[in-house]
Image 1 (spheres, rainbow, N blue to C red):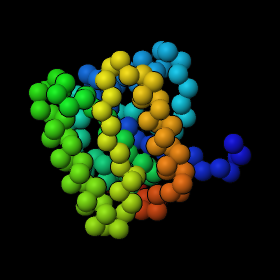
Image 2: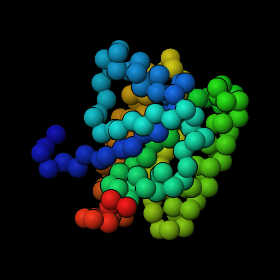
Image 3: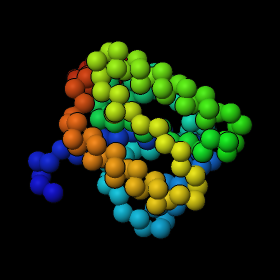
Length: 145
């Protein structure tokens, strides 16, 4: 990798019960993946408001990954079904605003799927490298609001 090669910044909203544990498993198993992510643990993927996603993009994220329990395995019974619906609507809204919806990704990753977590991060990083930097980020003092 050259010094000037674009490295995307990815914000990951990971559910406490499955995908955060999957990320932890990847780490303790020493499974290599790019250091392009910043994880925010949420109790359930359904707690990720579209405003959080937009704010991440405005603050400089090149991609946002929302990761939760597999459908039918949610600790909060139907939380991930709500997530699926909300993320689809958010993708449509992003496209309507002229933003690449591919910068938002939804994945179901269980606590035992550390290798899957690492693979998703690798794949998403490569997809974002092809898209290039996020061009809607705020700059200067505007980024703090």
